[in-house]
Image 1: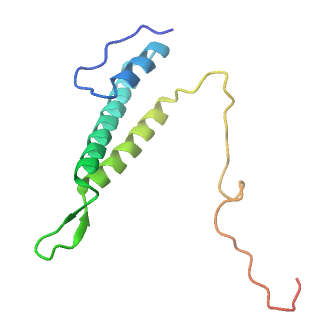
Image 2: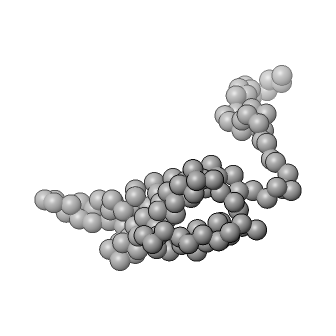
Length: 124
C-alpha cells in the first residue's frame, strides 16, 4: 500500500482517480506527472461533455445557417483518447495478472480478406 498523496488543487472530477491510484501504487515523480496529465485530460473531456449536453452537438453557422458540429465534440474525443493513452503508459495492471499478447494483425486473423472470388461453377 503506497502513501496517499493529496491531489493537485486544480483537478476537479478526476481527483478521486488521483487518490485511488496514488493510494494503491507507488509512483515515481515522472509517473506522477503522467497521472496529473491524464487527470487533467479527463477533466477537460468532462467539461466538453457538459458543454455538449448544455448546447447540443451542432450549431448553425453564419451566414447560411447550415448545422456544424460543435468544437467540444473534437475536444471531448481527443482528451478522452489522450487520457487513455497516458493511463496505459502508467501500466497499472495487477502484478499477478497474465500478460495478453495478441501479436500482429495477420496472426490474430484481422485485416482485409484477400481471398479472391471464384467464378460460378468453378472449384479451386
